Image (cartoon, rainbow, N blue to C red):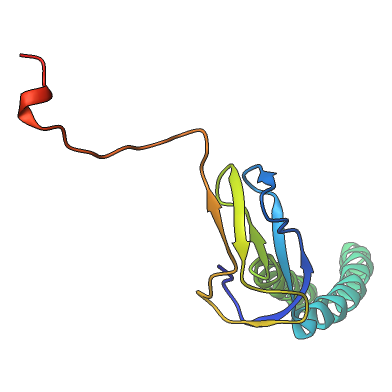
Length: 141
């Protein structure tokens, strides 16, 4: 099941195929997150250079400690934003929760999915649980 709403762009759900835990099954498109990550990445490079220059200026008393601290704070803020966006991007990927066989899939490429929507079933084939009752007359005493 996906964690976020989006449009399905890749599917690795071949019915009857065995998959290992952690394999990417479905990827949803979230252009807003990808664009934001590119923007933050570009912005993040500029303050890093600024921090380096200001560190050199601070050594020769060319700027105040306050200006240097402000540049460092800005870099930390941008890096935190980038980490948040990366976490959101990870939510667009549906990974196999355990080893198993893929059953019938309920989506195709281009489908709009919502959180909690069943995309396919995966069945564990190595572990089988049976629950049955035996009449008392057939039990060994």
